[in-house]
Length: 77
Image 1 (cartoon, rainbow, N blue to C red):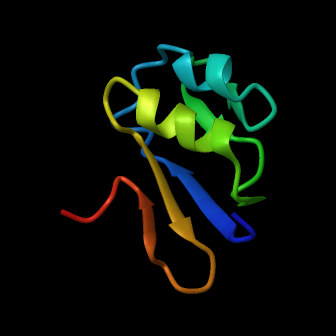
Image 2: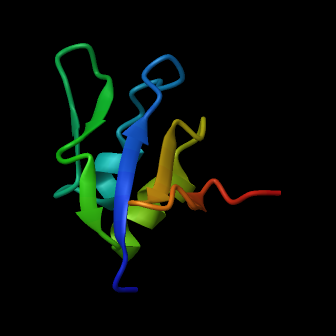
């Protein structure tokens, strides 16, 4: 993987399930309102971060390649 990613959480979609924190505890936190946010908006490509995005029940997590904006998740159809 060698890429750098930009990670965003759409807080209007987030339901606070905590699945992202369970999948990638180093990359996501829940705030006092139980809304998810990335610990850092920029990160090295990471299988746990991808698993967190894929496991989000409402697909509130978007990952793009930093610099190019190419989608990592959700994938383009």
